[in-house]
Image 1: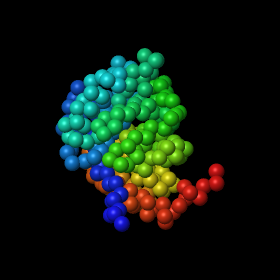
Image 2: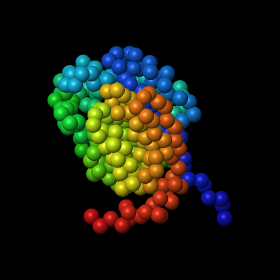
Image 3: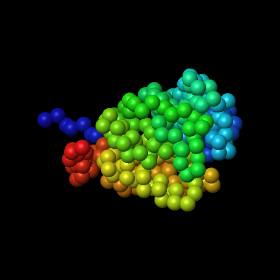
Image 4: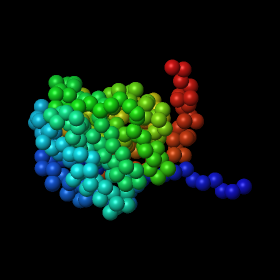
Length: 261
């Protein structure tokens, strides 16, 4: 019999770093912070330009998907021989309310417009940004691993993660700017692990650091074990997604196959 090919493995890096209010400086950070040697590098939500003060008008910082930020994401991905995903504000049909968008460039070329806007905990993201369409789920192939994209507040909606998994995702990537506050780190850690456990998938969630945001970027395996986790401060995490581990987890806990609804 011919030898069995090993299951795909994906080396991932999460960059927990703050974005500032100057887009040009944030673009420079992409090259400064993206390492060589990873298959996928994940930057946080709104990395092209921070949200600013709560309720700020960010429309002046919206760019098209072939604008300076996305072009630099693609350039850095090509230079480092990797795939890079990062968040930006994307110009849309409503000039006053752009999209909160993830751009992914490298082994695949994709974008995802945040579906669930952060109208919670006293914030009103929808006052300044437009929600993306509810489908189809954005799932791309990177190094033999199917990667699904979601953003920050999407994490609180289990149906979002399930739609990505039903679309074939084996790794959920969640760039975030999870606002700090009472219970917020506990919610974050609980939700990241819950999305991994209930879907038997890997989850890689990259947040912006404190003090404004909660930090605690994480990589969690399909049984809920934390493979890597940052604290509140700026950090770079690395982990490996191994599809043999995913297959073993689904043999142990075949909950997806046991669904009745």
